[in-house]
Image (cartoon, rainbow, N blue to C red):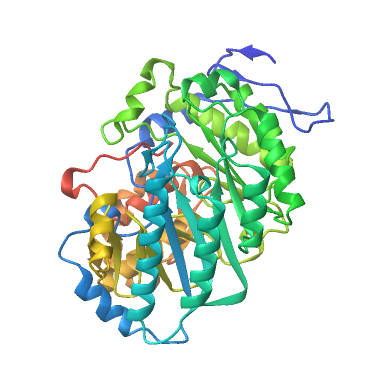
Length: 470
């Protein structure tokens, strides 16, 4: 490795291996113009897993509305389900999830009882036994569940719904607490895809984020998964963490790819200690700045592309045979997906779902969630009714976030303010207007959230702070 500072160039890594067995090099320069773009556009903006975004939900939407909309569903409509498990064995300091720490199993067993009752309440509120095309268990950590929990949930799922042949059942997994028996339980429950949290394999970084997870531990879990017949494996990595450098981030990419995951998510760490108090345990002084974060992402992205992965949207990568490459991609609260179901129903505390009419979120506090369900209520705490304008802007934002392009169509004149705000990005070659089609260039990909934010009619309302774009 060699570091230089030359005329017109910022300090940057210029020599990286591009394949495990090759002597070829990738030339990487962080130019002064690139630094200028980062300084100009590294703004706090939403991640746009929904539009309108969650800070704009309100308590004006509740259970009565939800029951009416569920009853109006066409019985032939395929559903997706999201099940939230808000428990972890220990707190990772980078975490932005809704979770709580417990070493006891009883609260988890009690929680599962209530999720199953909520599932029964949902099924009873719908006009028929509906078909399910996709289920995702997230957290927290679903790895906190025991074998009997999975057996009960698998049985309930097939009792209350018709699970389609070929349906994807996806689970987030923490290798630190997974066992071979647990993996076999997932396979027996019908799980088809697993998303493994890694973040970084470097011991110094792991210590700084309170997540000790050696490479060998993760590799063993991957072997167990494949041995159990679960071959669809995702892996979550992060850049922008304490002590990370360009070369160490590229090293973690190599280690991750050595395990041959179908998909890799390369998330930028969102440092939001004003929202997540445990993030105060991370020393701001050891976090990379915007330019360093951009350099880490660019080098990791280049490495993944060289190794045969395809870039998907903002921060996902997939092998050429994966549906994210060959199918139509959309974005929801779980990230990028090819799930085509028009309805997502949330189960569990804090889970968010959507129907044509609105977004809805369950009660976030576990105690209040369980009390509502025990009383026979669908535990909706808040939501957001969608207007025609919301849906039109959501389609544009989704197009930009997923395909780096959006068709503005005959309504383009309605977006004059958005296009005016994008003029600097056009002048900098980050976005291009081709007739009525708005395209984010490859140069502009790191700033796609900024381009999407131009169409956010609610941005700045409510005083919510967001993580930066890069």
